[in-house]
Length: 363
Length: 266
Image (tube, rainbow over all chains, first blue to last red):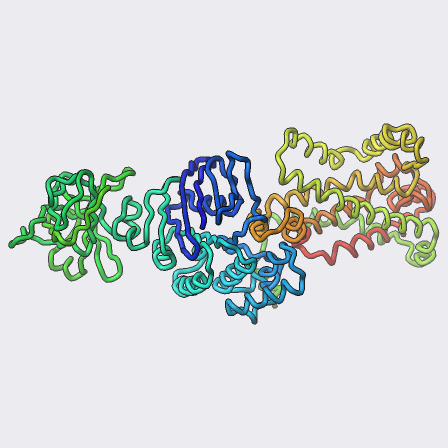
């Protein structure tokens, strides 16, 4: 069990985040670049001392500036798979894996035979003598995992393990990493800025933005109910802000209002809308669609076999935080629909969404 | 064929060629003149003279010893300059570089005031133990080290500054102590810089003249290294001076040529 209450001031970064992770759990730290994710890993590894707070692992205090406790990195039962892997370039794969054992006092022969077993376990027994420069990206990752696990740590930290890999090998390496992660029983903390990595590899997500935890929960919870614009964009949802009026009515901060099927929580609410649930029409739709509004097409953007249509109107995403980030609602339609409806920037359209397709939750 | 292809790819701008040729000629011409004046017929006898063999032995021994001492103290000094923050570091670095800039004679004089018979440290050391640095092989080595050490420190410090420190972080998380990290990760990774620094240091020590003659004198068989012997022989025995010079060139080339570009460029 890892409990980290982290307070670090580092240049422009003001990091204040609490992160807990249980044994056997994979927790992903997700966030934009510069949010402080890697600093969290460095704190847990002991490479970055705390200014405030406390890091505790299995009841043992590793860092607590209030009492002056600080266990240096070499004394922590922590294994790290670094970004770019950082295999020692002047050592063979085998010596890289044996390094931690040797450093912890294991005899040379014993360390090398244990390292050889680890290489075998990650399927690289035949590459034991290879220098890191001669390994492929995937092989290098496997050596890095073996090196981190060889000292049998209680915590495994992974810093953007897939960042250095191109998109095609990434899929394969992600699956492989998932397999290796499941063989480890301790706490696993994974830093990534790729939501797919996080969703595939982790049980739980902690979203860090600008040094603060903005959301945490199981992966499905976070994916269904994003709390920030950043997360909503990552998981591909429209996130609207509003206030509950009565049992099924939401008055949106963008001016419009929506009727939802589920009973509403009181007060400030967030509404998540899948782009696929938004229907675009040329004329006012007939029938009983209660959520229908007039909108204007701002932009169209092809995304594989779908087209993402940005709609400006009274139903739009939560206010933009940055300038040049217009408040729009994204609808996803087929290229056929674009042609049929004559969608182009500036076109006036009607949009509808069913009440049952709206996920509403407290903000 | 590969030569021709390479030439095509790396052909220099026309304006550079004559200047490069002039520079190269300027460097090579003196050696040609030396070779042309060489007394080839009596070379064997000249090289066998005690004046020459003593100087060769002293030069090789003292330059190697100075390089060894520089490695011993210079690598740690480079590490401190590259990796630690302390007040006055800029001043300390300037002092370390001073022997590179100063006329070696000044260095030799300073060494005398420090380690001479009546020097700051030399006097109590002599009164206590009877040890005397000047006019001894140890004095030659001290003078060589004094002028050559900065070359090693500067080169290794640059190597340490450009080395990726994240590898040291990785070693620490694997349980390595700071000493283990230095020995097994940092040092091997800056090995090219250490080799380059050691070669520069050795080359500087081999050619050392001013500090040596000031601090250790010019005693054949005791402190007379090759440069000193050449200078003396130019007055008395020109053929011996040329033979000594050619020997010095041969020794230097034997060390410099096998070094690959990457060691020297580091």
